Image (tube, rainbow, N blue to C red; front, top):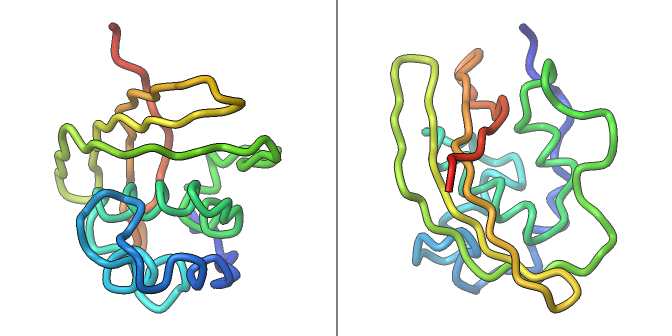
Amino acid sequence: MTSNSSKSSGKSSNKNSGKTCPCGSGKSFDLCCAPYLSGAAVAPTAEALMRSRYSAYTLNDEAYLRASWDERTCPAERITHDEPTQWLGLEVKNHHADGDKATVEFVARYKIGGKAHRLHEVSRFVKYDGKWLYVDGSYPAK
């Protein structure tokens, strides 16, 4: 397996500079997800990577989403979209790591065109060459 070598543009990090991080950690964006999105640091855990990917979605940071996705499962089509999405919040329900594999269960809430959505996912991650990567997700039964 090889990791995806594309880098984030870093441009999106400036949008939230000085604000609370969109990932819901309660920390400032500059001290939370910004270093991961800019490429200045690598997420130390699968949960930190998942939170940074949520922040990347709120910023439409396609480059970071691709760089943090296992290239074996990363879709060829565009990940972000043009429809204005209002991200409302992230709740991490569970995080379990076992060596170089991990799962993170979360609920992300958002609106598109005024309609509310709720994404409940159990994401799988793998650590390759010291870097956590998103593999895929499943959706728990309601």
